[in-house]
Amino acid sequence: MSCAVQTNPGTNAQLVLATYCARYTHTALGLRWLVANLGDAAPETAWHEFEMRLPASAAAERILSHRPRVVALGVYIWNAQRTAELVRVLRAQSPELVIALGGPEVSAAPERFPAFDLVDTVIVGEAEGVFGDLCRQWLAGNRPAEPVIHAPLPDLDQLALPYALYSDQDLRSRHIYVETTRGCPFRCDFCTSGGLGPLRDFPLDATLKEVRQLAERGARTLRFVDRTFNAKPDRAAAILNELLPWAGQGLRLHLEFTPQATYPEMLQAALCAWPVGQLHIEVGVQSLNVQVARRVRRPGATQAEAALSYLIRVAGADVHADLIAGLPGEDEDSIAASFDRLWALGPQEIQLGVLKYLPGTTLDRHLAEWEMQFASEPPYALLQSKTLSAEAIQRIACFAAYWERLANHRHFPRALGLILQTDPSPYRAFMRWSVWLVQRVGRTHSIALEDLLTDLYLYLTQTRQLSPDETRRALALDFLAEGRRPERALPKILR
Image (cartoon, rainbow, N blue to C red; front, side):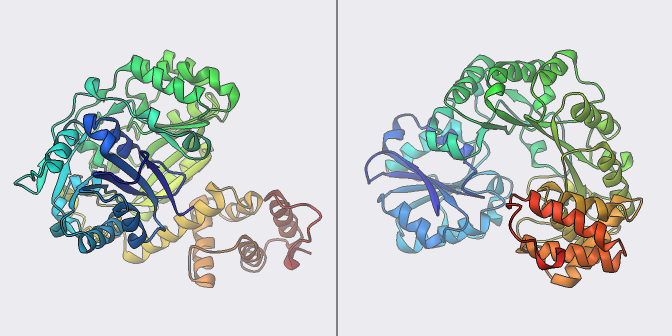
């Protein structure tokens, strides 16, 4: 599909809301929050979700087909450039159109948006409490005197919940996002959540009713976007217990936890009640170097290993552990040590990402001391620092891309085991394979699985000098496990 569309019946709509989603399977929760809280402006509204591959000209055509007077666009780090293209097309084709922006990418630094001079209004912060009134003003012909509007924090008890706006098609084929809290109890220097205000709760009873209805309607995956789902263990346990009856029907939850050495008993009981593998828990480890973690005000470095061990071995959760390469003062030896310690715990996924200087974070207090340089365009990745050269960061970025393909996506697990056995350090072993592969193919993307299989065989047998027979056997089993029929001929290199 080229785009996903949700709209009210009829062609014309005075107000159109739209955003670009990273993929079709992703849904725009922020857009649904706005629609749910439009009040009497809702009947005059259409809304669209576009895939990133849809050209700006095509998105503009769909928006302008409604003959709107006002267009509001959600801007995120992944769609900022494409949204700027869309703004330029809309302004060129409809000069009188009111164009408004909102979202995290423009909330921290509105003037940095590439097409800022072409928009009428940027709403900074959580817009649900003011958006309906602004729309009524725009539709009445009144435009704000200032281009930037700072929205006060809304009263979460007064917001209409948006979950009924997920369609049956969404429930069948897309990720369903749920939000039970806003804000964050922590102030990590690298994270935008630290600037979102104190931790605030949506009404628990109403939230439980809504998530139960999503499960009753057939949702198979619910992704909770709470920055720290376990910040209030009693709430977390109540939500887990409410949804437990649908676990037997295959319901899977995605949650984000902060490491704790010991989780409270009520939360332990709720976690352990779920079937093995049906809780996917992302744990933001970031670094196991305690000094580095303290430097960026990240809690939990001393507790992370105990927390991961419990979640994996006792609660039976699928654990996704995050590491950040490039935190102030951390060198590659420290990154490798964190990676190896995590690998020993056995999480289902380790995501190693290069540090990004996101708008609105407090990383600026470290820039001079650690000589940190970042890209000026999204996603604002680290280019080099006092402790990591540009070459080292490039190597780590390639490592991360290949690890995502081979390990996190579970392609060729036996071959991965052969790679990792070539060095006591899993990080060093995989880094050698990564350097070899990028030198051979010159890219980290668009590598067909059969080509990757050939590369693995050549690396393991010629560079690492492993047994050709053992390597062929492992790769053949991996190849057949990819879903291909056993009777299909193996690639020539494995015969």
